[in-house]
Image 1 (cartoon, rainbow, N blue to C red):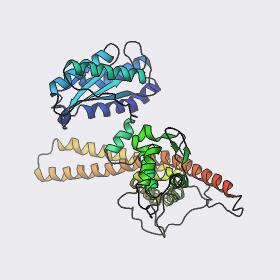
Image 2 (cartoon, one colour; image 1 turned 120 degrees about the vertical axis):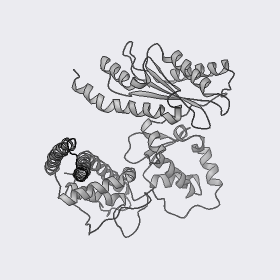
Image 3 (cartoon, one colour; image 1 turned 135 degrees about the vertical axis):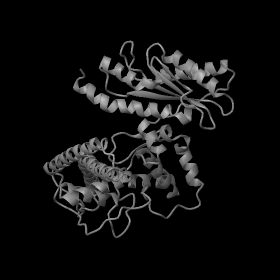
Image 4 (cartoon, rainbow, N blue to C red; image 1 turned 60 degrees about the horizontal axis):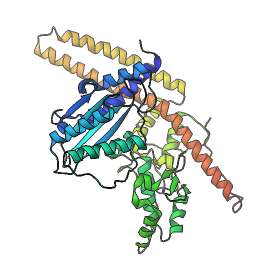
Length: 440
């Protein structure tokens, strides 16, 4: 019997592993799974095999799996040889301790292998140590195999910063991530600068904290860690590259540094009043939409006016707008009202589900075509209604989670504003706070 932690892992982490395995073993990429091999597991049950290993050793925290790649020069290798090399590499590196899925993708101009490695060993329960030493071993073994098959290898390669799977997936779908926002801010700050000093001033005006050094580090507002520019974004983001790019400009851009925004803003009906003191869900959401620049204003906000953590949520604007409409429609302001509404929806779902099942049972004995068509239409209508109710339940659960995150981001914004105002009091002692939102 699984304990609570194991059940939580099975619900969340198992899905994460499954998402990566499903992507790497797609039929159109692997010729109907012809080029898919499981090591210490079967490809069809790899997700379950990896989950069982984690449950056996009670290892649920941290990375659930590792996703690696092996690429070949276009036109130099056949799919069979590429998959053979990938399988030998996986057996050499991990075959004695870990479950691995090897998948060769042939749908692009360059053939490449994917490796999905369980983070927990089925032999001793120890977790895979992803470090420079294991990376160098993987690279050396890959080069050795390629030379044995007469293939070319990269001479003196440079190791780059790898992406977290969630970031890679978001960028693949065209979504904005906070790292891509940092990169975009730096690019635009360069376009608006004629000197190195002006460039750093533009970044500071956007709220960035800058740590100089061989690899410049910046910390966006509200984030705990610094981001190393060259390590994360490449050689175009060194101080020498910044100087060259600035000097190559004949004149700086005269536009405001604007954040990325969705192609179309949400449309709202009615009059919205900016809240000041109340802290209910409706006031919180409307205030947050104002701070994101999504609700109507007299003029567009610049990136300097929109807090970095709010800009990060612009890609969720449609979902947030859907949630605020739900809150306004049902007059929900407190946790008690939200839970009561969720319970009411759950009861409706149970009733409609039973009604639909009864109709489905009756359909088996109906022979009259007209009556059969009417009953099928009723089942279809019930399914549509259930879909709406389940969507609303999901939104209610998301409101419960998102509201706490919103309050924390607003708190960080207010703290940053107070910190800036304190620094300005020497020059502007009459400065007053702009924000009065109560987070109680």
